[in-house]
Amino acid sequence: MAYRLFEGKEQASSYWKYRISPSDHLIQQVLDFLKKQNGGPYELAVDVGCGSGQGTVLLAKHFASVVGTDISPAQVEVAQQHSKEPNVTYRQCVAEELPFADSSVDLMTAMSAFHWFDRPRFLREAHRVLKPRGCLALLNYTIDMELSYSDCCSQTLNQVCKEFYEALKPYYSPHLGGKSIELYREAYNSSPYPDKEWQECVWVKRPMPLFRFIGLVESFSSFQRLLREDPQKAAKLSQDICQRLMSVMQVTSEDTEVVVAVKYFYLLACKPQEA
Ligand SMILES: C[S@@+](CC[C@H](N)C(=O)[O-])C[C@H]1O[C@@H](n2cnc3c(N)ncnc32)[C@H](O)[C@@H]1O
Image 1 (cartoon, rainbow, N blue to C red):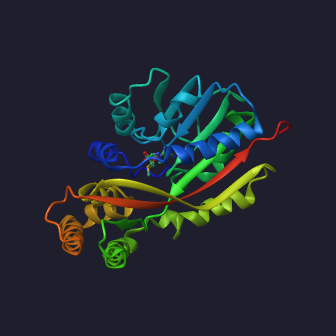
Image 2: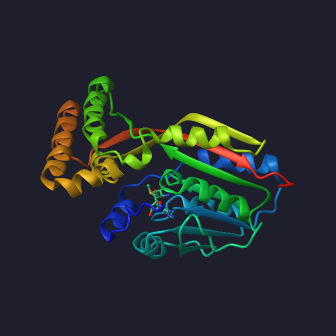
């Protein structure tokens, strides 16, 4: 069953404005794993659940062609509007039925998306389309991002952030059944591919204006659910949190730059030669 939570045009453009992508260093770790399994050349990478395409484009210089796919027409439209790389294209389709031939894909990624899929069906589909010695990379990050600002006390700052995340807990999707990291760990443990790697914690630091950090949290499905159920409560929550963060930082502008540390985790797995 597909979970269609990211369909609206507003959600898609909020993705484009606020979502973060993995760092080049993180993408390099994925490429190093691929290279270790199979020396190339690499023709095709597919980024499934690509959203507005921020992560997809990071693959462009490493493959002859890259295709971003997403269930949401609005997300695909935004990705196409911002697309600059000539070798990157986007297709609207479900992760569980991909429009690629058997054994045709060198690398398949899903960035912050695998947990929304029908996971067993997607994994079967990934197995079908991956080339022998092609790789699957499933990346995600946790909501509990940490802020730092100048010489301001990070403990006080992060206490406010924690309250933001706690307030969203009742709105987590029941589909995820708690923490998404468990779903990835389970996929890693049950993967029949012998060549696989699990990373539980890779910190990626991103400088950004404070309003963008707030927008990033607002783009999460839990905040979006609160927004649908009680728009006033949602608006008040993020305004209060933003005000309190500014007060701890002793600044008056939401444009003030903070550093956001994001905790990524990932699963890498290589389809065996004989499968
Ligand atoms: C949390 S967003 C991540 C988007 C992007 N990869 C990123 O890193 O910002 C999850 C994306 O997965 C897509 N999605 C959810 N279920 C899907 C499915 N069954 N098939 C394809 N895409 C799906 C959503 O439309 C959404 O764009």
